[in-house]
Length: 458
Image 1: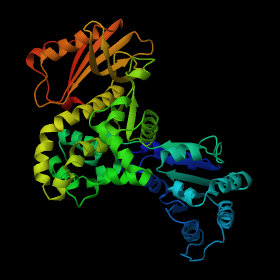
Image 2 (image 1 turned 45 degrees about the horizontal axis):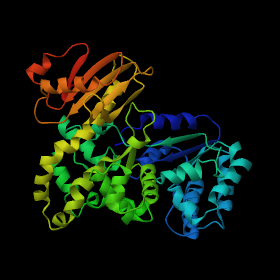
Image 3 (image 1 turned 120 degrees about the horizontal axis):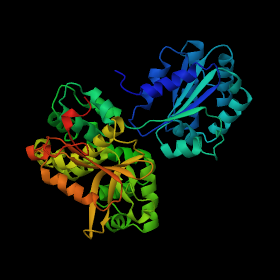
């Protein structure tokens, strides 16, 4: 069943009906659902679908030939074109007569085996294809390659595309649709441990508990998620061992460059370079405190991918035990630490919720804050702060994923933290998985909102 991506699918179909030349780049990390989106789009349309392989140019030409001839001739011909130019000549002839979609999936693999393909495509577009009703889609999982070598100004294809789609992980509201039979808590945990990635959401059994799903897919050495992060690093990066050490350090709580350097024994310039690549892949994110304008010294690195965060925290250090079939025992350790793991996931869910509901003002930014409290003279953090475009209004938020009700003291602590900020209008939102104590509920008013998890996303 195809879930989500309604806006992306609508964009593609709107351009398809333009009766003009179209050229889209679709990219995003592996398993995010790029191919499924394309297949949904080309369903019942005349389309050539070719997937680049990590192989020689000759093998890719042969596979491209089969894909082209099957669509254009309606037969699975084994005849191979002499070169890609000859194949594009047939594509041009067909596109002159009727609408045609040409999909090249895993384009970076094709470009690696045949570096001249982008220049050839540019020539074909400029000289012939731009005057036809063809819709070209180049798709890739290497985001840096797609952004720099396909869409970047140094690419021969620069300026030719008519649109681009960067596919991101699903938000919580969409992820829930993969597991409608689960209760809200298990839906949230499923979202957290899969990172909202389509492929992983599809793996989880909608009719089973979160415990059963985690044991089956993460704590079983025969399942793909048992080694998925390690395999992704090997596929995407030339030196996976170094990247693995960096991701391990970040997962262990080393958020600043000097902390990661100390943990990995890398020098500063090397460490920053590798971190930049991990950010480009969407595995790591670089964060700044939401209210700070010049905060380079305060920037931190965190794991951006929920599945990586879960795997490096709970699976990586238990690989030997899981390999010995001790997944049930490992889960007993995981179970007690899940609430702590879910804190960051719950922050993300609350941020998504705030963007969708009516706030006291139009928010320009919503994000985390950390820094020095000059009043307390200590380092402090605030889960989320929403501010308006003038910087005069703010909502301060506390997000707690705990198995007990949020007490009144948490309200007082957040109000106390907000004293250091000079916003003219201040509001306070409290999000709790398990609701609130009676004393806390009595504090609710126009400025203080108490929101239980079960009230969200109804």
